[in-house]
Amino acid sequence: MTLPIFYSFRRCPYAMRARLALASARVEVELREVVLRDKPPALIAASPKATVPVLVLEGAIIDESYEIMRWALGSSDPEGWLSLDDPALVAACDGDFKSALDRYKYSRENIEDAREDAAKFLRRLEGVLAHQTYLGGEKRGLADMAIITFVRQYANVDRLWFDEQNWPNLRNWLEKFLASARFAAIMRKYPKWQSGTSAVIFPEL
Image (cartoon, rainbow, N blue to C red):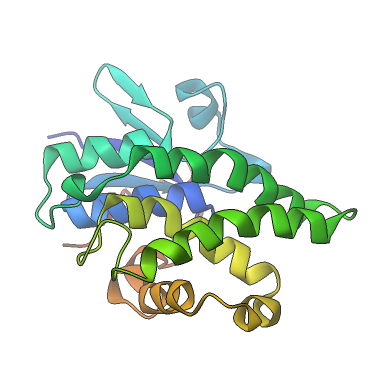
């Protein structure tokens, strides 16, 4: 049986959240780790956007990470992640928060303004997590895993500043994730994929 082909980049938060869902679902794919400054022609041929992640199925291409997550969990959802989704919250993460995060991370001007714009979303999450362990309740679910890789990226811009902020529940939520076996498993390093190299199967079941 031919496995789906999954193009990924280890540190990309979009690819990370897709890998989280694939690992939770225990859906095997052929992982192709790419270097974004040297994108393979096969990736560009599969998705002209040439961004990761990209999932190549028989007769279909999925090149949006949240949709890859939902596809994987639609195939198998042993941890019940789909029932703990919040599409509106994920849309807020992928929209205004991600835009402000990019300005905070990559811009050299108005960094404090961008940091504050993004922090508004994090305070919203803190408000939710003050009353429950995870964004969907007392179990981690799709909403958590679709958002947390971007919160990690925000925290890493200036971890000292992040840790000084008054969002203890958000910090605890993030730290539990960073210390988890699941996070360690999806962050394993793989060699750059090249045509003709041996297939790498992910996740390792």
